[in-house]
Amino acid sequence: MYEGRTVFAQLMDHLPRHTFRRLVKRYGGDRWVKNFTCWDQFLCMAFAQLTYRDSLRDIEACLGAMPEKLYHLGFRTRVVARSTLSDANERRDWRIFADFAQALIQEARRLYVDEPLGLELDQTVYALDATTIDLCLSVFPWARFRRTKAGIKLHTLLDLQGNIPVFIWITDAKHADVRVLDVLIPEPGSIYLFDRAYVDFRRLHRLTRAHAIFVTRAKKNLRWRRLYSRRVDRTTGLICDQTILLTGIKAAHDYPGHLRRVRFCDLETGKKLTFLTNDFAMPALTITRLYRLRWQVELFFKWIKQHLRIKAFYGTSVTAVKTQIWIAISVYLLVAIARKRLGTDRDLYTILQILSVYAFEKAPLAQVLLAGNHTLKEADIRNQLSLFDL
Image (cartoon, rainbow, N blue to C red):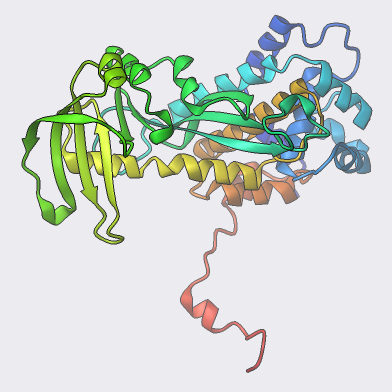
């Protein structure tokens, strides 16, 4: 029998503890703290994410059911009270966990740098989008964005090699999506994919001046003049590939340079799409395939909302909400890092499900994640008994 450390403690070993201690010292997180440190707070919240706890009472009950195992999970305290955890979430600086997530982002990007993208490109490809998390107005009055609704918005820049979120900005829900381009620092040579909500030509011209590439969709009321047309192979779905100049008064002032307009018809659905980009060297068909990759950020939002605790919150203040979101992102990155380091090809959802039932168990983490990797074959399904006899 394995008599080593718990699976939860082994997973936490993949975190850079020295970086966490440095951040706690920077923001004074453990000042005047005797028992329940910032690290204990992080472990509690990470445990809640991994085991799908819905409330502070759930966290207290689960950790309190096995107090003798708290030390083996990595806690320094013997008892975790929900009032203590609630006070920590409400009062401690959320920037500790935000900066810690940034450190995990750098490590995850290093591990996934060779992840296949599906296209032969040398540049880094990012997808930019935002999602709204609805809140109860009576509980979160500071997050009002309509007369009867409250919510916050999660602006995310996703590195498509490994689906790693490299930039996250949390705002109130009434914050316009396009304003994230004002705080985003463009990387020269990188490719940014976003939808029509981000078409603001003054901001797009800033990306061009920074030598960054963007691919987006054109709005229907776009006013332009064709300067040059390139030949296209219409059997691939391409309709036209043009160099254009904006003719709208404000648009021409905000973006005085040339743009590339690519029109494409999806051969399966018959839907026609018009793309705008500031890149004139990339093949037109590659531009259409690039934009299709933007859907990965939508899948990322769907994934974290379904499998992480960022829709039901353990606290009601701005600090508590931001703390929970940043720790949830950290857990996502932690699982991605452990997956790569251990060399397992299981998807993140499966790993989370395994960790949720093995958290208290003492077994080698690699063995837990790699064992039982069995996929049902068609023969197995045919041999299964029917639930109903017709």
